Image: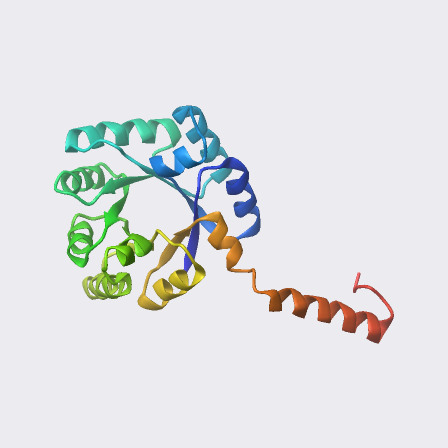
Length: 222
């Protein structure tokens, strides 16, 4: 599985990119708001500067097809044509996905709560499908059944679409999404940190250092 950070706070993004093996950053208006960002263009450029040549996913906010396309053009002009445009999987979003793909743009299909939505977004040529794991669970939808079905469809059709699981509240949801077949996961900084937070890990590292000191009368190798 590959990983991205789902955050827009520059300090958290920078630390995560320096610590974890991440392939990019995902953002949306809710994340931007939570990060206290107030200047969309300036802040998005700053995120792009941190991300470098890694993937950056940016959500449109328009609800109609033409509005989504205008916003997609503005985003790509602002932070690069390689930026993945996040389009909601709606009746207006599907035509926008197809038209963007025809222009050579990269697309992430968002707001996926059902297998049917994911199948349609795959057929529309989306590069990524973003099922919302925790939100689906809260809506009494089994996200792992949906992820498995979408992975089976992708593998059967032989298309390059990848599943980018999103909306996580704990590490177990991430590992379950991986087991269900998600190719990638975008994760908040708190859950990323929790992936390494088992106390047994620190105890094992301390034991290695203590045993080396006892055996060789030295604090370390170099």
